[in-house]
Length: 201
Image (cartoon, rainbow, N blue to C red; front, side, top):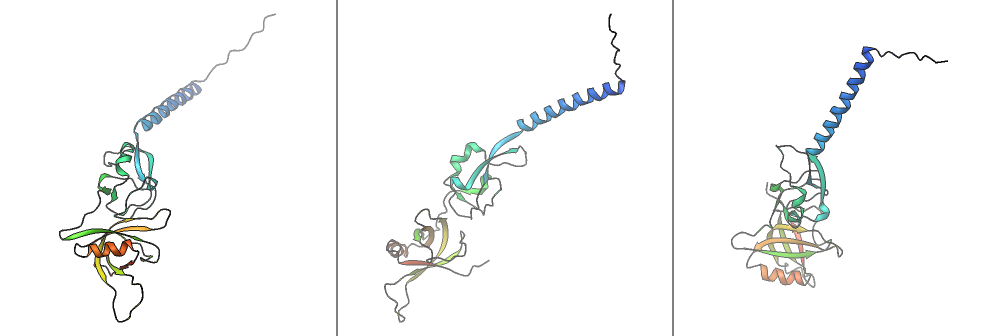
């Protein structure tokens, strides 16, 4: 005996709904593909970098972002060119790096000299130093003589390189060229401290 199966009749409404779902799925796939094709890998700031500080690899991260013609972040392929450069402005974590954010090492002006001093904690202020700060390099004498003031040399902060391992921080200070030889001797003998002066804004 043959069994007769009833024919299922699909309503026009369910057919339209099915077609709509297919179209929505197709459009979503197209949208995802378009989004992925419009992203690029760029350089972002991972850790805060004060103005004038040397940029290290650990300060940066590679992120994928949607392309925007109004933004021109540095591409990930430029990472090796950025590392070792200096921040030209204060860089905050999460920001995208652009060409104007990085530059070469600052140079002293006419009649000046750049001197690097290695300082340990206690020989410079806990307050964060930035490029352009007015400072005073002061001689640390072997013994304190209240009748004789220690030698001191005015200068301006050029660059700051945070210490690694030995906790020493290297600060480049722009000073008068005539003062540079004595400051170099004092620095090599660990007999110099840095004082932050009131800033002129």
